[in-house]
Image 1 (cartoon, rainbow, N blue to C red):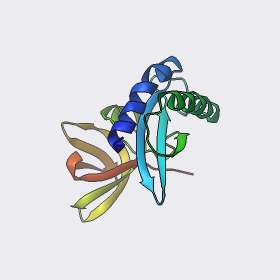
Image 2 (image 1 turned 90 degrees about the vertical axis):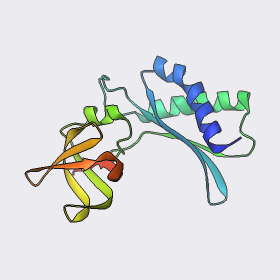
Image 3 (image 1 turned 90 degrees about the horizontal axis):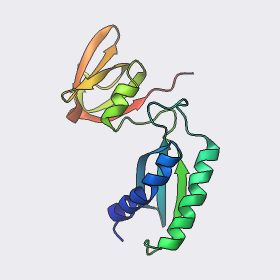
Length: 158
């Protein structure tokens, strides 16, 4: 089965179960890493959830459920390792809703080309509208075209 097909099928299988558990799928990927194949599932909490973070127990529960379903469905034609986790503290902003949900948080932005003399920026996320991501960096509003962003993550502050 093709990589995209496996991740897509897993996403479809998981959707009703995750909704029942007040979780959502952040991302599913099926890829070769070294000599091994990995099916990696990242769980998230809905934006309106009481807790922002997925617990270890929730990951374990989904792992058990998904493992049983994958054994029954048996649509992946090679051996693989199943990993279920959360996006982590330094999560990448992927969905449009992420930009609204994490408005006001510190982000790290990497761009394909220099903007204001640099390919790396850190600032407070102001939002994303009409293909433009706005952050406040050093007291100034920086507007970055979304198609120029290679990666944008929440910054981890200790």
